[in-house]
Image (spheres, rainbow, N blue to C red):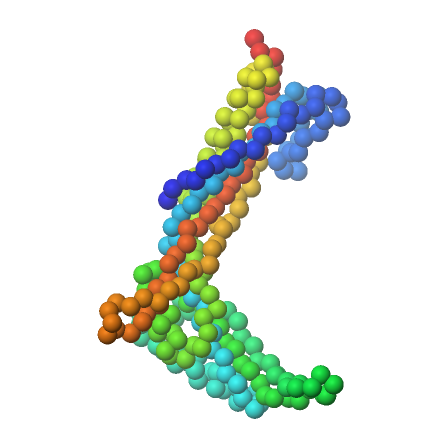
Length: 247
């Protein structure tokens, strides 16, 4: 895990007139004295981290003359897919249905003619939770060989995102504090206590996986390689300081 560049955002010195208002942290906390001399600053922290878990979305699509036929064929194929993944070491609790649908398909070769029912299509998308990222390509290949006819995507995540979020927040507070010190010095005022503190932590910014085909040697079959992208998490903090004339 490595921090990236953090850009502080500074708020202007608030008006010292009676009309100035501040935002309380919560409804249970009284508002600041509108006549108080305050300095409001913001800081943003951003942390990049390597993902340590992923979800593969494997879809099984089937067609049939009736909804029943399409659904039954789909059920057979999804069972084969689940059995193959289970044999590969994926436990059942790490597999769940992400999407399921059965819908009619119509043919309309001539826009002026009435659409005719062509049949039905069933779709069952199985989401597979993977904690060993080195096995992603292997499991994708196994899924495609065992009944899946589409890969809807690979999503990455952080199993310990709280620790990453805490580091982003710590850096955001540090940047906001430094900004307050610089402003106070430039304005020839002295920082007092922090009157308010609020924060917003953004969820990890997820990037799509990159997939590629690689050959181990000329005699081997091609296998899919999934290259994880870094996850980005941001936190923003707002600090309100009391200020006093410099001594």
